Length: 326
Image 1 (cartoon, one colour):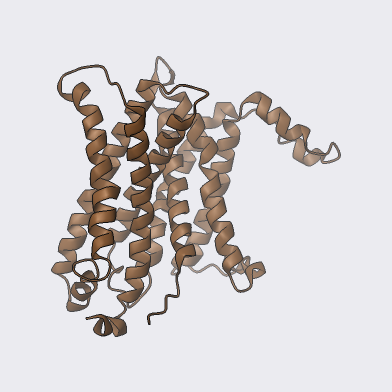
Image 2 (tube, helix red, strand yellow):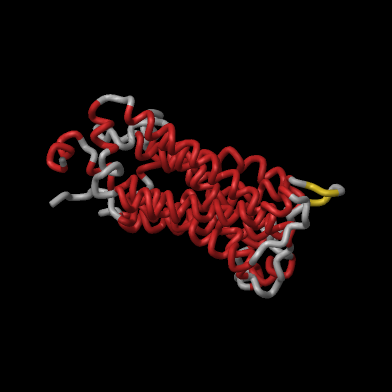
């Protein structure tokens, strides 16, 4: 019986952190793309900004509550160590969360903002001073947040790679894989939210933008997976043995069929099929709502599975356990 020190909560934490990073990046990018001096995709920018802070805040909260002594979490900030990914990550996640909330606040409609502060007691004058319109600073906040969103996406992979004696994790390609998976998951979440919002019919130009963006991120993720496998086969014996976990071992089916097949290749095929008429024949893009929902759902499924596989398979790949598995 194998004991796992990192369980499902860590998987959820890594997934939610990456999801927020992807949401922020896609929203900020949509805000920067302009037509006639105006954002080309304001609805995507607003929706992504309003969604971005919540997954990472939820994931961080769950992780803190799971600690044996959760009230001591502040010690992560009182003893900073440059060589510790956990220490760096604590500050990175905190700063990113604050920036994401500031960006969401910048996109709050005027009536929403007034309703929010109407619930704050009048005696709290310091809080009411925050009731200001910062919509003019959206691009500035997005620019500041871009490197932090990339950092959070990478960090979720670096956190694993920094653990010694786990050859399944010990390559910088894991961080890159997690980054592109995070960006793809955030884009898919936006696509899902956009299509499910029945109050406002989705515009085809917004749908096309997100589908294109997701195709790019999925393709980049696939281009990292192949070098990861090749690198493992050409590496030392311990890494080759670790790769056996997905090349004939207990995680083979979930990696190749569930993650790579249904989580990447199937949604990529759906999205390329949607883009093909406009790309090859110059026809106007007409996205199918059901196909968009299917592709987005599968991408999120694949993003979660990637982290599940790496968290659990990585723990089994410790040097002293590999001999027990073969």
